[in-house]
Length: 164
Image (cartoon, rainbow, N blue to C red; front, side, top):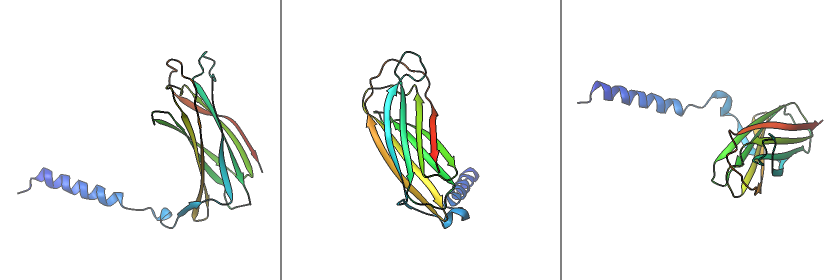
């Protein structure tokens, strides 16, 4: 005979499992494909001393987005990943509202250079147009020296330039 606690636990597991398979109606008709009408390029990765603490334990990464033809977008999500040699990663998300032809974006990563080896900057960009999400991605690697304990990691947009 199954105890009341076991039956209740099974019921909760069934409800949780059924809820996890539900797809929102707004996402049901959406599809995703690699963009041919825009491109993102990871163009800069270097170590610096952004916070003037005397230690070059910060990084600056840069990216460039180019739109080749007019499209029906007003929102761009830019996912910037800084992957450490150990495989640990930091994520910084920038949302651009509006249309543009070119974007240059520099991101400052404070206190993130914590281990020796090659760091990787990955950028993944999504633009929704109608019922389709278009994407583009790029990456680069750089090898900064490391010095001491840098403090807590932070990230911010250092510069943003868009041209219509």
